[in-house]
Amino acid sequence: MLPTLERSLVTVRRRALVSAWFERVGVHLAAVLFAAGAVMLALRVAASWDRASAAWWLALAAVAPLTAWWLARRTVPSVSGAATWLDVHSGASGMVVTERELGASSWSESAREHLAEALAQTPRGRVARALKPVLPAAAFCALALWIDPPRVVVGPPPAVATAAIERVEEELRTLQEQVELEPELAAEMSARLEQIEAHADDGLAESTFEALDRLEERIAAEARDAQQRAEQAARDLADVATNPSLADAQASLASALATMQKAGLAKDLPQEATDALQPGTLALPAGAQLSSAELAKLGQALKGALDARIGQLSKAGLLDGKALATLAKLGELAKLGDFDPTHKCTEECLKPGGT
Image (cartoon, rainbow, N blue to C red; front, side):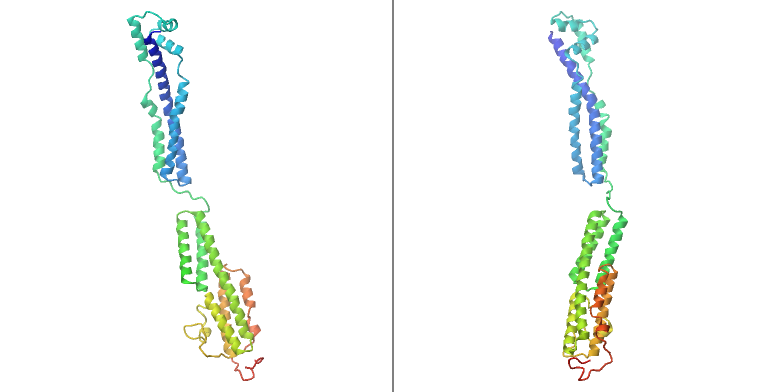
């Protein structure tokens, strides 16, 4: 076989491979880029991926040249096919096929020129043609990375979160009105509520409702603690009404006042209660011993204040509906001790068992 023909056959097959690869690589690359762009856009919209994380999907583009090469190799003509192609395009004289089969022949200069002309007609890869379908796909990928998609809120509508926040705001307001919280605790709860509102504005529904549940549980816990202390104070006030010893009854009154102060239930007491106390404090004047009528009057005022506060907490939904009924049964002063506020104690009624 003449060296010229051998090189020509290799050239024909190589150019056919490159041409077939260029025909396919643009289509494959465009398909991969469109797919990567769609995935990136979906992830940025639905999963809030940032640009750098989403851009890793562009690595899929490396697959396109490989798949195009694999398919292009299947279209490369065989050596016989390449010889036939050269023979047809060099004048169809049969010299190329004959020379390849015999391995020896005498070629004229004109035959060599025809062979050179045939090689000039072999297909070549066209870069511009290959890039034509790639450009729209690349533009789509760039758009998917460049735009800032709106955040998709998955979960309850914003109106539901707004209503839940307003409900918790009302519960916290009622708790602060009825119970004097520690300044640090009140500031902490207010700050947590502001943070929840900020999360709701950012569209973070899941974290918003989780934080609301935790804050609502904390508010309810403070209300239950106030209820328990109110019941303890009510028991002391019941003893005020029933204890025949004025000293013990006054001691029970002092205990009730201390419990109410510790629970934050002694704010804004009625005038009839504060008149009997030392100004600016929740304690009786030093050395003072109240009469049975004064004890009854003060006890009734304090019990009424407790009932009102627990009633407001129950009305706001912070306590079970039975909370107020339970408190009412503890120390119903009018029934347990029918004191006459105008009664003046004598030496007889001051004795144990006296009235």
